[in-house]
Amino acid sequence: MKTVKQKYEFCMKVTADCLSKALVLDEKGEILIKWAKDYYSDAEYYFSQGDENTALEAIAYAHGFIDSGVLLGHLKINGYHLEKRI
Image 1 (cartoon, one colour):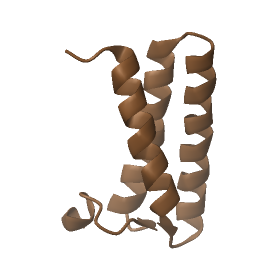
Image 2 (cartoon, helix red, strand yellow):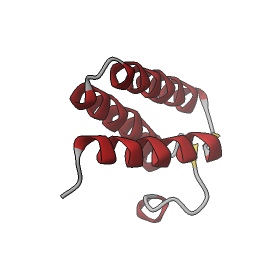
Image 3 (tube, one colour):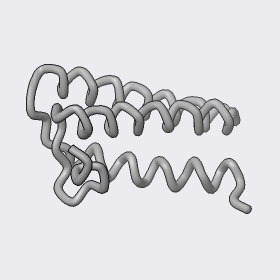
């Protein structure tokens, strides 16, 4: 079973990869990316403070904004698993 720290590290890597590859398609996409980046930063902060659970929650929110953006057509990430559902 993975620890909270291992889950956090995996989610941070996946989310960072998505943020670096995301193509913003419109104004709503810009908002969603900003929120994703803000929550990503929050995750880093909470982890640095030793609050692994809150850090994991924050990175989950960050990735949720990315998923939403892709599903709603405001973001594009080539090869992203949710693109097939649009």
